[in-house]
Length: 411
Image (tube, rainbow, N blue to C red):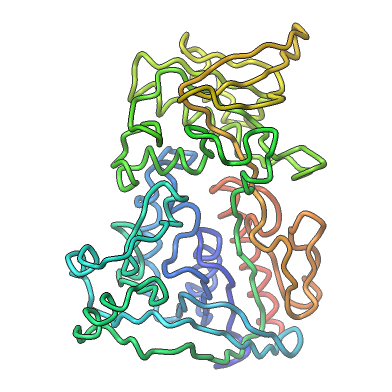
């Protein structure tokens, strides 16, 4: 391994883009991804901008490019343990958790279904359960099952131990990588709904997050794409979207998360396409639809069954199997109450690194976004740097890759 090699921390859309940009001009690139599969948040969406494609249409092309490029090597279930050295000459320790499942394990569905224990499905944001042996999505990459050994019963472990493809004795391992520059593309996480106590703290039935809505709308999601209420599986016919749920709030996230308004408009379209009689209300502080997206906003709001109300939602309470919102209309100044079948919180985009201490003296600001690092040959990309949509995240990744290439070329 030479110092012309580049490390990319994070295997979402930004990380994959940065890695391929560097690999396709001849650099050895290592991707380190903490989850079992590449794809990041984009893989959890139903559709993404600007073309409103399903995630498979963009990600499968990227996955194929990785398969066809010998310069790209990736580690899943892996995290950076430590970074030593300096710009142009880093030694990076990577800790890799056991997968317990060997390659060539495409047909384990019946085995998984036969296991006893059910656990919360994190990929579905808690909307469903899964087994300890799982493959999160149809187009998962690598197309290789993973076993959460700690989630198995004794009977499950006995059954699994009889399969040649399962290695229950596999343990965590470490690898050392020598690289000249590093790209951090660690992405974002939805702001924790339990922090939003005035909006139910995540405890009100039929009040969900915007990412949960994406999973409900997805054909590979927990309801096979049927947008229904989590409590009873009924079609919601009167739905509210609450914007800036945790964003632009000094008690939570002090910044605008950039994508939330567009996400809610897109999800309103999901509802109207699937349930033609559904009524949608969007409560907002400001509707931010930059550039070309303004036309999309106008198209959505031309629908007579979608109304946008400039106003702050002050409180949310359960009302039987419905949700009651207290809203202060910013135009009229009138505070009123309305009840909905389902409410979607446009929760903020929090950087994944928020609250973490980073190696190599890398710093984050008070919100968790990476600051500085360029003098060290370490570059932030995508939502590790600031809130961005998918297209702008890819552009940011290309820029970070170019800087990383210039760093190692200069050696």
